[in-house]
Image (tube, rainbow, N blue to C red; front, side, top):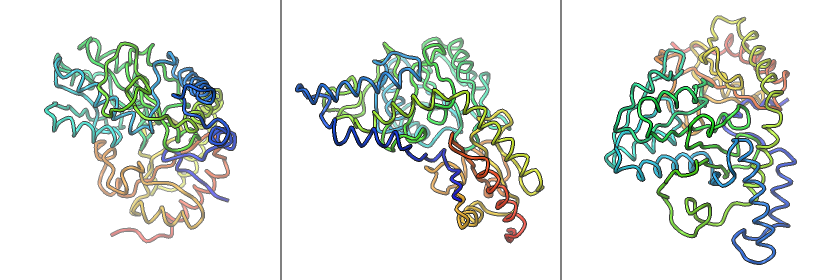
Length: 378
């Protein structure tokens, strides 16, 4: 039995979503910008998908900009907003536990003369509204905080953080990286006072290479790319229509089962924690109130890559953290202040709606077996 427990890295495309993408590629292959009938059919499919994503984010369809994924959405949001607001101020506030596609952009903006403040989490890996707002001042033009941490599942209270920022400086634009929350948790940026939200398709059973950015009406971004006028001129180039339509359907399907899936994830998380409590060598790094579908844990004395390859021989697939980190020591666990040995032995288990109890049982059995038999690092 294969136990795929690396769903925060990517998910399998469901047959229905794959079938829709194939149909768009082979039957509705027109360019949405073309003026003939096939162009009209393609544009109609694009409009339907935009509406599906907008419904999940509870926003207007015209506020959705399609991109190639979460990384591009983060780049467009941060580069576009910061450069457009340069005359008003030069300070940006983010966190020390963001995804690399946010941290790398912030480093680029620092090289352009922006001042960036990186807010540290508390011992549980959570960013509090008070600590985030404390870093904001009258020069702050942009704030960015992820909703669900991709390594630990730590939940950051985006509505409260955004409200705290507004009280400090009403002119701050707020961006939330919601890639790990999309389709699983409620996201309502218009109600929360959040102007920019990044989401991705391949975390919710859509293909890789498609994502979206919510841009609230009236927000000005400078595009990092130039070309034709697609996607309100913010993301020029012919749209990836098969991927976009697949993402729309996948988002609609995941969102429709959100309550059911939440109960499923909570039961799986409890089963995993209960099973692993048998061994004193295993410790949970995720906070207790984390998103239930991401669990970070460490097996004392056994490096992450050793355990990952041990589990792989039984067709059990987990990771040591964000796939984008490519094996580097976790900046998230480091920011939490965990000891180096615990960081170097960390594993991330991430589930989706199709994850079965039997997969969790098999993972726990083999992990405990490995903890008891693999040689410990001296």
